[in-house]
Length: 328
Image (cartoon, rainbow, N blue to C red; front, side, top):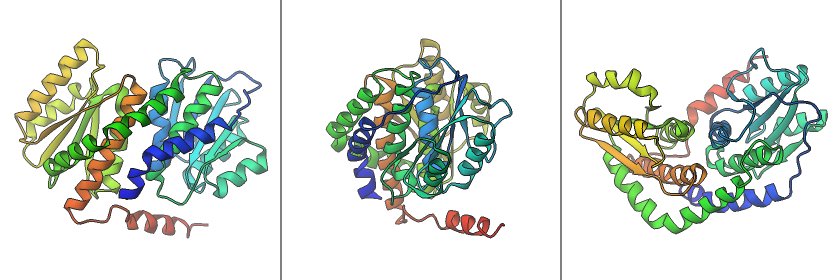
């Protein structure tokens, strides 16, 4: 896993090279909504990219993690299926549902059943290198999804350049990031981790939770400001030193939300002695997201190392898939 995390930067470069060779034809009909289907490490890129483009995209973007699509999805929908292995069953079911409704479909995968589904139905399919855990291939889905939004006119024209800038940033900051990640991991160990950020970075907080779940084998939860101020902040009345808070500071909150952020830190510090703050670096939400993804990946690895755990092992997921495979 250390090697795979280290390769995040080079994966971005390779993903950008793939994107440069891809041409995506614009749908012939009117597109009124976009749906990204994907699960776990394959799907989180959809949530993150949908937030990157939300101030530019003229149609709603929905992130679906289920076997079936909402009722309003129809021939005016663009459905993007993201499955790293190409065999994620929920995504394949959802795409079959999309096909029956006459939607426009695009696939992103490394092969498997999704590639065959796209070939059979003459849908465009972007292929990425396979063979790694899906959570270690996030760079490929981030770039290919961004490229789809860009080419179809639903994202900012600078989005791929911003991803490239993020790659340069993490390369230049690597020594500092690893040092900071180790410091934070030592503070978080033996606690239940709670992650908070502004709502524009909800996808990043979900990714962080996933990495602590899979790499560190830790239960944790995440929430965003301002919504957490309307419920979870009250719940901290029952907080204590069993919990450690990880606040993600991005420097781009509105004045009122920054005040909420500061008060939330103050109140949680009155309940637990472990409140850590990660300061994002970068000039845009895309660059800051790349930075945060990478430093949190390192934290999750170091937390696993401190526990003498195996960050690659996902035996329970393999068992679950095998049991589901018995259903005919």
